[in-house]
Image (cartoon, rainbow over all chains, first blue to last red; front, side, top):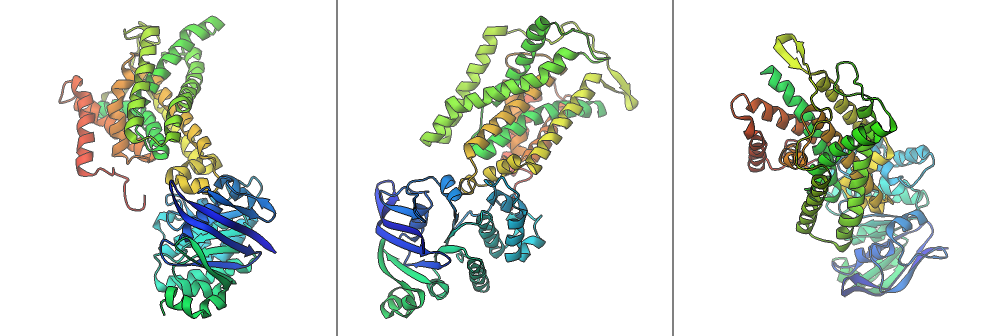
Length: 234
Length: 304
């Protein structure tokens, strides 16, 4: 079943369009990886889906509901969570408080969800009282994902989760992403680390110059010789 | 000397109340509110109006508590004036600063508008009460208690310190333990991410103004009780407020508390060597020294 769909998206900042008639589909429970060179519009696509940017054309549908043009604080209530690439934690708050802020809009008792998130990232439970500003990059990334997961979203949008991390941490974060996905959360991952991102993806999309170049099963994109030559470094 | 330090703590706790509001507002909407000093004045005069007009008309007796220089009238006027100035601050945000925010105005426009707001508040007070110094209780004798070491302190001042302690403890628990308080700190940390998390940041801003205005009002009333009321009183506090805020790292509430006490003590102790007229200059010199030596303040650092 298709859970999230964006069609004919044209969007960008002020006068300049970055995306031109871009489409993407996410089926429930799957990982969709979006790869492409710098400036292809990958992050812009996530921002448009999440309502940070308003598309000039096209629409975004969650299940059967048109959510085009809704503001982020509405969209987060519909079941989409977003983890920006940078500044994705509250540094002066503790780990626990960061997670609580992820659940800010919940008025019910979310202690069970907090437990589940801590089970996914046990290191965060150990350090729950520590300020996030003092954590390493990998742990911060876990806090960022944990915050976004507190609402038990149907779709998680991850913008370059491995950016700026040491290689050993990159594989750890990708393992965590797979674990999160195994709990049934569908996700769109934008990645520079294209090969790794495609390996774990059910579907892969290649963007270039703000346009769709290819979409196929993850391994099929990996196996495509031209894509490999152009975007995966040989 | 010990006596000057105690007076410094009294003055410093008043500065702290103002500086905490200034720093909270700066932390969330990143602009220096030059009207903040006049919130102190507004609080002091609002309490004067409540105590001498409204509550006397209602028929609340004008007697004092024990050896204090005030009674029920002030005890009632105090929280009401805090609420009133909290509302003034919120209204000011709605009619002025929010408009500038929505237009994406730069810091200079914010600074100039807050200067304008400061003048408006002050001139309203000038028009209503005139330019003379006023007292909550004219002609009151205010005997001091003799403590060991020859320290003289008035019962009023002891109570003032308790009130400040109570307000700051309450604010501390609000910020650390309540959902709204945590959301305020989160918004100060990263407003973009707060929005992404579904936090209504405009509501957070409203709370911040309310709290900042109320604390400033408390500071102004306490100064009025301790010294006197004058339409310029809050404006004259502006340099100490900014000095305390910068010293304690802009945006850090606990820093503003420490900064306020430091500035207050430094100002009072300086009177042992300098004419009291130079007190404001002391705050100014401290501010310049911090800006030259450690502009990020004592609590500034990479981890925030």
